[in-house]
Amino acid sequence: MSATSLTTMIRLRAVQNKSRELFAGMNDTDYRLQFHKDLSALGWHLGHGFFTENYWLHEIIQKNDYLTRDVSELFAPEKCPKPERGPKLPKLKNLLNDMVKQQDINDLLLLEMTPPLSDHPLFKDEYIQNFIIQHYSQHYETMRMVFNQIAIKKDKGEYKPNTSLQSCKLSKETVSIDAGEYTVGGELPYSYDNELPQHNINIESFNIAARPVSNAEYLKFIEAEGYQSAEYWSEDGWQWQQQKNICSPEHWASNKNGEWYGIKQQGAFDLIASDAVYGINFYEAMAFCKWAQARLPHEHEWEAGVRSEKLHNTGKVWEWCNNTFYPYEGFKPFPYDEYSTPWFDNKHYVLRGASHHTRPEIRRASFRNFFQPDKRHIFAGLRLVFD
Image 1 (tube, rainbow, N blue to C red):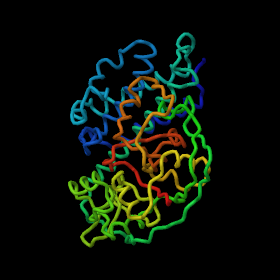
Image 2 (tube, helix red, strand yellow; image 1 turned 90 degrees about the vertical axis):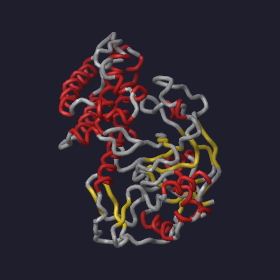
Image 3 (cartoon, rainbow, N blue to C red; image 1 turned 45 degrees about the vertical axis):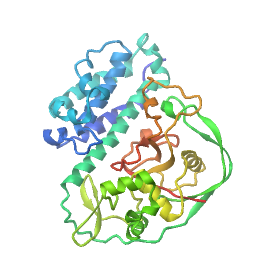
Image 4 (cartoon, rainbow, N blue to C red; image 1 turned 180 degrees about the horizontal axis):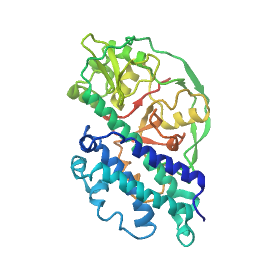
């Protein structure tokens, strides 16, 4: 093993910089506030990424916790509940200054390391460097979710779209995936433990939508009173709908004239009819499927479709699949026992693909995202399978 390659260093530097740049112009108040119960304060995600970098490079690999011992009670997720994280954050200016200085030191360490440091097994094939890059990337997207929630909270329902969204009938354009043996799963050093081991699976032929469900198609479901019709919903899904009284995707809003528009970090915007809908949870996705007389794909069907290069727009929204998150046969936890294992609880459903905010570092066919079925603050939509 040797020093980290220049290509990997550029990738690490880029995601470090991109994460900090999100806070340009941010004030200490918004930085500390929790805008959604399932999301931490924006600043915690920034600090947690920095803490994780130092935890692996210093506390684990070099057995030195001088950078982590005083902040682990805040930035180790299991030690601090989400509502308590924001008020405990240091000043934003101080955190950013600390990050710039220490990330320079860390990057130089990775670029110039020599034995015995470079002989540590976590550096094999640049595994831990890629782990840190991908960890930053995941929290980068989560921070984008927080920014969207800030915009949603600040919206006053007064936006007048230049072009009103009009519904359209559901497209039945599909691609056929042949029956056969397909490879699923990833490879080291880029893949997480839950993507491993790579293996072959046999699937039956199926017809899957060429594209994710669009805004206009989803509006058709709304206009058909899909949110008010119990026959489209599972028992748990209908209970959720009745409790929450939801009637549209998370990132949609309507003005006093009943015109729909979207909300993103930059504020309100016109919903494009052909764009993939996002901001829906598993319950909503399943209800739409029932209304459309279709189903969600199993994650292996989705991956087979992607590897066949037949699916379009796979990087626009995360796409719900109809199976829960589970360990592949031969699964081995790594780099620590609790990284994926706690989520194999039959309560988290898999999503595949990527969103507009997903960093390139985690855009791959084998990547497995997962959330509980009621979560809709994520950039998630759906793609249909017609049997």
